[in-house]
Amino acid sequence: MAELDEQRRRVEELKRKILEQKKAAASGAPSPAPSVDEQAREREAQRKAAEEEARKKAAAEEEAKRRADEEARKKAEIEAKREADEEARKLTEIESRKKAAEEETRRKAEAEVSARKKAEEEAHRRQAEQKKADAAVVAQAKQAAAVVSIQAYAQALKQAWIDGQLSADERTLLATLRRTLGIGEAEHDGLEQEVQLEIYLEALVDAWRDGAITTDDSERLERLRDQFKISADEHLRLEKQVRQDILRQK
Image 1 (cartoon, rainbow, N blue to C red):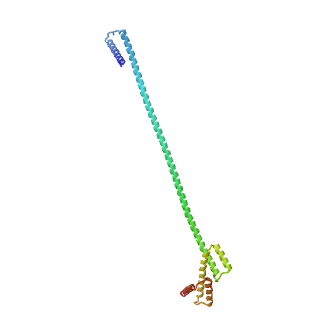
Image 2: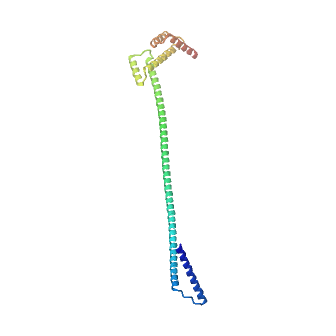
Image 3: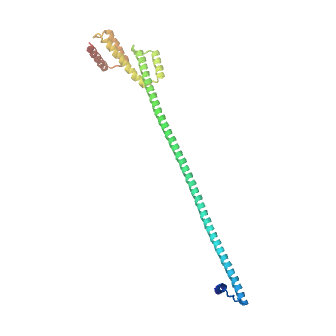
């Protein structure tokens, strides 16, 4: 600090002497010749002033360089941060697009699975409905076939029993027909009773058609009753019904 003050003092003294020389030159008076010591001090002051000026210039340049470096560093940091932010933004955008694409792919896959499932369910439903319809058609066909079979067998039974008795050949033919048509024994027994009753009823109608029963008619009816195992009460009920019908028709 003391050295700096001394340098300042010498610089001020040098400035003062230079000012005096300029004033003397302006007034026309010759300037007093400086002494050897003064000259030495003046040169030293000039040297130190030059050194100080060089030091200041170097310090200024160093400061300018430091500021430039600091500014460059800040700019580099700002640029690096900007690039990092831009890179992060791009990565975020890429990740966002990737997630959106994955979500879209997942959504489409789920939609396809859902559509395929609905299509399969619809196909199963239609298949089930078709099976039900087919089963109904088959059932109706079987029922119709069963009705036709029963009707055909009933006609065969009636044809066989029309004379009130069955031959061995007729029994064999009826048994074969039952197997062919799939008619069981219980169903056969029921149909046989119905057919026998129908034959007997037709015989009653024929016998009472003229309003009275002949001896032949009576004998024929008796044979049918024995063969068909028709009770007396059932005979009386059927006979009464037939007579009433004949009277009503007249």
